[in-house]
Amino acid sequence: MEMGWRWGFAIEILPKMALATFNTILAAGVGYAIALVVGLFFLLGQRTPSKIINWINREIVEFIRSTPLLIQLFFVYFVLPQFGITLSAWVCGMITIGLHFGTYLSEVYRGALEGVSKTQWEACRALNFSTLYTYRRIVLPQAFPIAIPGMGNYLVGIFKDTPLLSTIGVAELFHAATAVGGYNYRYLEPYTIVGVIFLTLSIPAAMWVRKLEKDVNKAQGKIKK
Amino acid sequence: MTYFEFLNEHGVTLLLGTVTTIKVLVCSMMLYVIISMIFGLMRLSKNLLIQGVATVYIEFFRGTSLLVQLFWAYYVLPFFGISLEAFTAGVVALGLNFGAYGAEIVRAGILAVPRGQWEAAHALNFTPAKRIKRIIIPQIFPIILPPAANLTVELLKATALVALVTVVDLTFEAKQINSITWLSAQCFGTALLIYYIMARFALVPFLRWLELLAARKVGKEKI
Image (cartoon, rainbow over all chains, first blue to last red):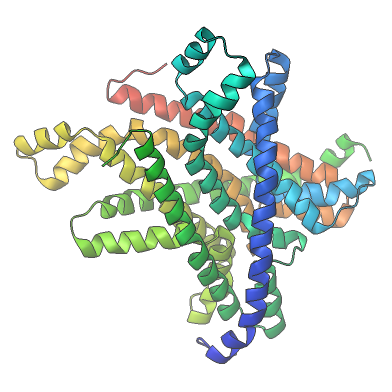
């Protein structure tokens, strides 16, 4: 086997990798959209007055958060067919990522809601605003900016966890690299290209999130030096 | 086949896998703690070269996916004449990846130590090394341990990935049993439960105890 980097091979496989990158971005985007919604449901479970629902919700969140995404993927992918539900690898992957990161996002939402000062609620009560109105016009507009950095971080996090989808056969970037590498018995170029693509996409994204964080802090009057 | 029969037949295999998972966890934990300390301090260095090296390292490992790093360490390094055993490759990749995240925690922790402490140490004519070692480091533990505890639980979860580079850990065994018996619910369900128990009833209480210990050391009693 020839050692060292081969440009010819790298350029030859580049179009295939670029195409797969599109799938990776799609997977991250869809997974994130599901996670955003799932997070809202977990948040709802957390804030209902019923103690039992609170408890069940918390235990579910704890369980999902303290077990590996990889095995959750396997579980959903292999176990659902036993109950007669056969879903494609894509759907399984999106559901699992949505559930897994939904638990994290519910924490982000919770933190943001708690970040709104209690006196805001009291003022609204004093002004005789309804709960819904208070949420819609007073609390959520203040909570949202607090949640933005956390939400951005998990977008980048999901993006970096999409390679796990390759283990159940979703044809994303990492899957393509493994396939190309296995076909040609050369892993150096495919895996390196994957790394470079991830770097070029996630570093700007992380920088953008950091800038958002700074902007939010500034808007909140908490300027850190 | 009932669940008890399943456990009777495959329980030992899963437990053996769990032992490997714990080994991977302990080794990568030690590695990542050391790396975070070194690079966290380097990141705050006044020397631009040292600071630059640390920044590049941190951005690189935080910017790429752990799985990619893992496969790179196991499948690509042999191209450069460095053949690592699967276990070593797994521990090194995990340690380097989490070390990058940990370094940022350490950096934030050092910055959170009140300025007065630096000035007082300076005024007492401590050498820079002694200042860091005797005054600053002991005080950062209560600050960095809570985020570090979160990171360590993430590390436990991430150890599952080493199964993909053929380390025979809990995930690997679960996959193996699944491909023999096709009892997916039983084997992956059990694996999930074992990870859950490890995280919730062993790792987290241990880390809480460390937090308590650190808080007590600097006289900040927490409940």
